[in-house]
Length: 387
Image (cartoon, rainbow, N blue to C red; front, side, top):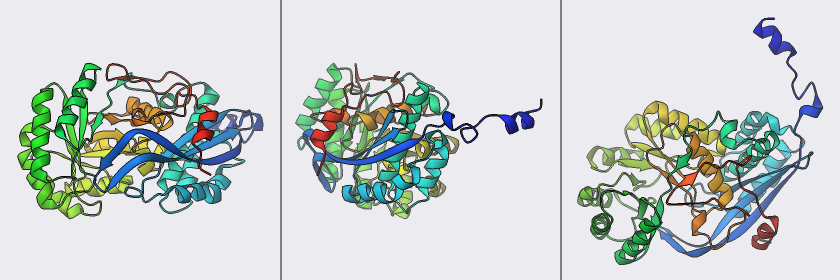
């Protein structure tokens, strides 16, 4: 029998409804998760993390979970709008459908409304978690299987005094961490460059350092910081200029001794292509909340690899172990993860899972469980649920 004939008679869920994984309920759950301490970045101070959790239930009783942080300064998504996007647009598209047709459902959600990538992300993540649980395989296995078993997360340093950053980093070094991100774009550029040099001097050359400005700099300030922090050997400087200032980023990339990483300027594969075409970045920060889910993030990683761009994967501050698990699954899949991975659940005072993603000796091992690999505690979810 030839392949075409075999394909014509191969059973499908449409032919045999019993093979389908029917979605019977989609629930949007806004939560406020407490942080251990406030996180300060350019233009934003975060004391509690506003996140959307999505619970997708199948007819067979299996449940999948997804998560996306509200990010008004990054994606434009605010929590009430995210809830409305799921309830009014996305849930009606996927309820009653076969979750095994996850690629088709992802496309339908992507085209259902403009933007709203956070809401799309949480739904896509939940469906992939559900399908992984159904087949008893990890999300990484659903997308072809991992290329690595261990990922190295970075630790955020954002204290007001450099002495406190150094003390905190030294403590993390003793725990095995070896990758740190500095928050810049808050103080004068010369002061921040001096802090970067001081941190490098204390931590030594064996650790990786990068800096993130969250669009908080002018061209002149970013250039000055890059020149004065040259000897700090930063792996990259992330999004110093406004998201729409591609001309400025391209001009800065030509003179900066520190490679540039795009973050807020990247919200789709099209934006990655545009930035690369202009020579505006040497790497891309890929977040599920910006891409619209796990499947679009996998696509974006593949494009970056083809273009020769460095890849940095990141959660928004601060998502729970649901989103962290998704990021670890992606990190194990990424073709080139040479600019690191940033999970943020460890900044939370409490998580919503019974088995939070474990960071041991500054490393995270591949999650072996089915789906995302974490178990959500619905009692905890309800405790942090916003009315």
